[in-house]
Image (cartoon, rainbow, N blue to C red; front, side, top):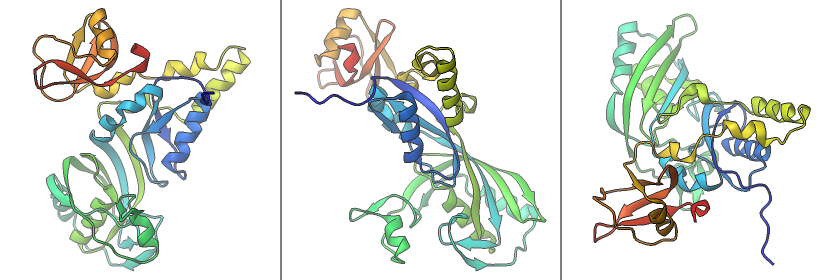
Length: 311
């Protein structure tokens, strides 16, 4: 007998506003429980210290999480100058305290120096793995292991505030995937000669998704209570907050098939259409999103990931 999945089949994306103090996985599980969803995944972890946009993909939307993982991100970060910590944020222990002796001009110049492409070594407190273990596990044992630098791109970085009295700064940073903001802050502190660490981090944007579309766990729970008070199905109020799954693919070229071609595509058959561009392609059947495809060696369209619901 086939095992039934717990929960209901729900497809789409909700832009969760992750609160401070919990892990991204905890936030994911809370959202999954509220939606009573069979399947869910998040697209890019935020540290417990951090808040902000955490796209949660439900059901078939989980097939396209990689596109959100790979997209650019925008953060607002507040940093304390004069102190360096083990984790480059306020969750770590202070390991060094130094005098802050900088000018506004020097600060602005050093902040601007991060613009563009560069190599960044990930923090020892990241979730990246070395020999099967997350780096943070080694760090907690005081073990330093080799880390590969990664190419990052800082598209924009602005100094929004410098509070001389508290020696705190606030910046807005727009970066490529995989960029560690706390590493930027730590590196900035070293460039300034005083040390620095993150005390607040808020992700305000993932790709093209607007900040105003975010919703908190509390707001979702209020929707559930409202549905209960109105004696209607909970899905009546919470499902309307879901974004279509193809909103994760707005940057991809699109091919639109006929209904018949869409059926063939959804069953894994190659479809002969006009010119098929290189790379991954968003595929529509008339007005319905049915998956992503790519060009085969003959120049025809083949399925890369088709939606089960389209079959």
